[in-house]
Image (cartoon, rainbow, N blue to C red; front, top):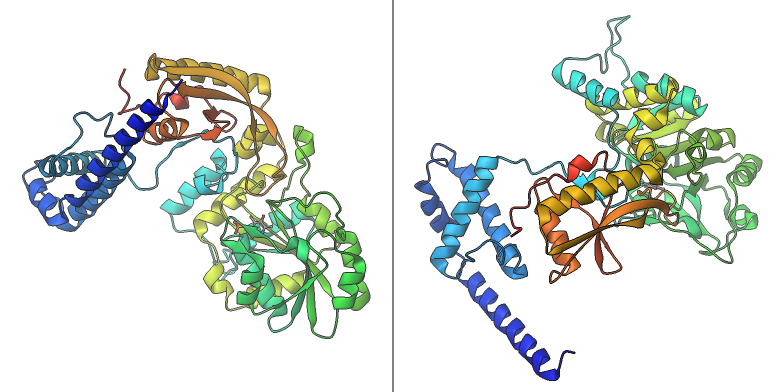
Length: 488
Ligand SMILES: *Cc1c(COP(=O)(O)O)cnc(C)c1O
């Protein structure tokens, strides 16, 4: 269909477009010029110069991105083509941003199909947790204050009983996140000594949690054993010596070793440790407190099972499958937890009253049982039926069709959602999505348009199409967003 001639024509047009964009960027007016232009705008007068300057810088950055990608410009007619037009566009964007007064951290619609999306803030809190957090924010609280004695209290005491009851452990401590819990555990229990880990478990998660790096920072020395795909009991046995402080087991989280594999199970590792008088610590990552199997989902190991299997200490996140606030929990033998509490590093890693308030309220939901699938957003999203999702997706399709106009094609299609945050990365949970295509716009351009919506909607691109997965969207009404750049 496309002859060489039109291909050449398209290439020339693209080149011309690049030149126009480069020229526009070269004449982008400096901050001071934009500030002077802003001075005459009524809604900006009276605001501090620092604040307006910050907003101008943001408007410029936004405009630069828009010019480069040629998005937003095509739609926001007339596109600025001169220096003066650029100044006006910066002023317009600055004024709009100031009038909207939007915080940088903005609510958005998670239509990625990843229920626990790290970049989107992971677990949504249950209502009682949100209420507990707000109450703690508004008032002085007994964070480290013993109401019986009037003396100093221990902030862990606020959640320790609940954590012990739910996991069967003897003691528990809470820090800022699971990476901090691992760091604190290794520093408290193994600084200057060796920690034996299987090569198959030396993980990196999302680029920022690399177990070998974290270990080095903790002062513990890594002793790798086995091969990436196979580690045997003998490998551990041979590595144990007078310098060994711990045996560490790590949940491989975001990857799976498949095929010709061998792993030493926790119970066996505990047995090896016992013979040599060495504790086993496990970094469980997601730390499920409730059996996902009962919700019809692939099973994740329960914290209580790992404690029962003999792990001396188990660490896990508060905002993954547990469905609470960002936190790192360590449960296990009292003596080990005490050593973590006594460590000076803990002062730097501890969490605040808001986190503890939300965590306590979340743990109470588990303790009081009832229907967790109804009360905890994370478990509710994961346990919704495809039939329910079909209805939400169908309604979302109608709402979006009304807003997007005739050039867009919208259909409800089967899709696969994921738990996210390293839990069962290879498991695909059947879901439903609205597939959005357009006569001319590429999926990336459609994705950008949805990101620019108010509030932003984040979907994903799969098989060259933009998908809006509804598994983690409560109600189709969430898609009643405004698109400033859609021409109908
Ligand atoms: C997610 C994860 C971490 C990091 O937990 P954060 O709470 O994000 O700090 C550490 N280890 C494992 C195995 C994980 O899955």
